[in-house]
View 1 (tube, rainbow, N blue to C red):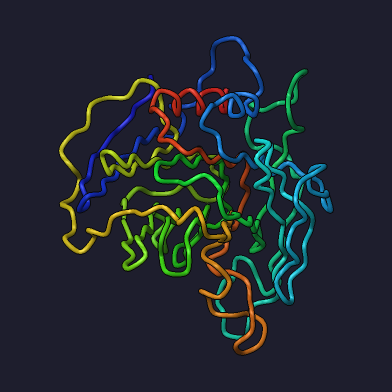
View 2: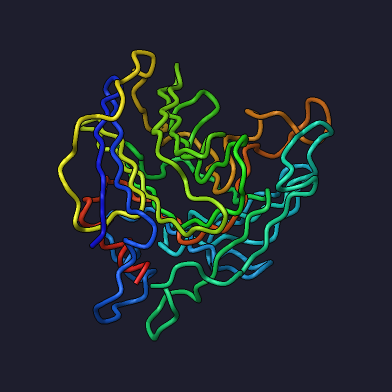
Length: 332
């Protein structure tokens, strides 16, 4: 039997919820195989974008899709990260320039890279007839995926972001971003792992940014994790789900008191404004210390180290039972 824990923590008008399943107790072993995981994701009506991250190096954007912008100065594009939803939120795989002297990220070294089309880490996405993609993942070593989010894209007033990750790092002391959807003034959200190896959110409304410390430990050194984050605007509940099992229980007493300082509400990015989203890196280029020349454009900081696959973005907060089924289908 698997064990699941829930905590509900109000943070001003925001709240954090998570479900934890412990090692060896969550991955289902019975039942008949169903459709490939990617097909299940693509069947969700509220899907906005799906990046399986299964592309080969130097793959072009899909036929008829807009051309991708050139890479930042000093960076190299490795081709398109295709959005299989059909909404043309295609990204670019970017190898950024080397870190400037004095930057300390010893796990990655001085020349960040991406290794495309590595072995799949999502067991339930094995290739089968009718599958929409050939499953594979990307090994992030400081490179990232840059996704131009055009004006008039769907608003993320409510949202779900889910992904499968397999970290490589073994020590604390660094921040690792899984997904960033935030403008330079702080509107939007960032999902990352902090320097204590704990899951953390950064949310903003355009005037202030709140960092929400969940105290939930992140897996390290090759442990496969399904992560999902949801936000419901009607209830102002922001939720973190880690390997959610279907045998969940009621929420016990909150594990820690809410902080009066973290009362900043989440505000969706203005859908009329273009912005850049990132997988495996945090924030926009002109919002970070440049890695090229003084005052010039550089790459985002807070790079991810490890494997990421099957990143999906929805414009609604998916029901917990749906998230549980996604985890079980991907892990089966």
